[in-house]
Image 1 (cartoon, rainbow, N blue to C red):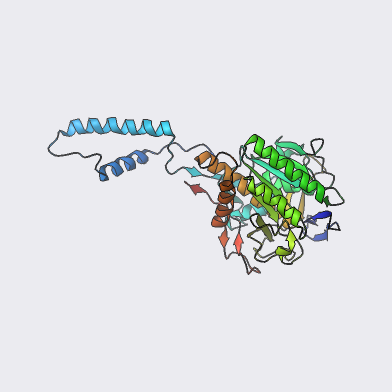
Image 2: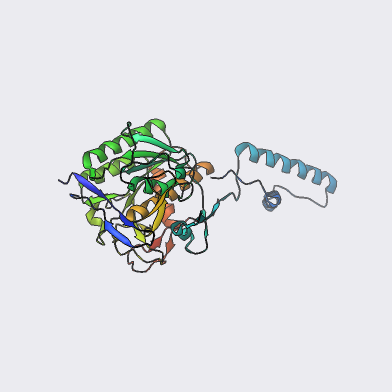
Length: 380
């Protein structure tokens, strides 16, 4: 049995020239909007249409107007009491240009990588994101103090850079998707790979922590290896505990169904596309891939300095875009009142809606699941 996995990564220079693959072997809601005046007129019209309110010619018009005002006020009070939200918009708008850097991957979330701004339904505030990787530099400016040391509890030090970059895409203030999410480090990998025993132990620790806290959570795996049943089973356990799992498809330009955890049935498996909305040449593919996200030439935090950024490529970079989008979506569903704690339904909501809002037919070089991650503003 293979005991060490690789993290899926290509490094790139600033000139965007792909370097060597680091393949160690063996083997990513605002408060409710104030009610608009026309909302009350709409409610009144619906009540009139339903026969609840009628102004009869046989009755005194003045008396009915007074009664109508009273009833409207009562309706407003009831709505306030039950926190009824009609046509609440969930939307965050950001520029994709910061300090001279153009974050094209964020820009592409609306299907246009050159408009220098993008929308997303939320910022992930109050959602926990577990990053199973090489550790995270918690002091980097992009995290604004939101990184927690998870497993092992002694350290989250990143000696490689892969984990810091992945976490930055998920929740970085500048380069991330869910800019207010809580980030928990699971240091399962070193410069020499990712021991299977560490992965399984970290998965168990994360599951128990979520079950104990009852907090809405999502987990990112930007790692991969040829098929390993025990690894897929560990991810299945997390899903059964109500934790959406996002996994990278792999960088072998091969069938993702032959790899773990990419082949885990109910995880969201993510392939990579480039700035031209083409399938990245290295990205795994096939019917086990659920959707694609930006994964080539992605700039995010560099572990080596608290204000440094670097460019990397790989499906390791694509998966965290989806993880951040899921974290933001969980925040929307929580604020909207649909969910409050981990459950199987939370996983279903995450999987279904991420696919539902993805852009179909946008990519070239893709046969199955031609879906590109998209995060439009929502009105619920």
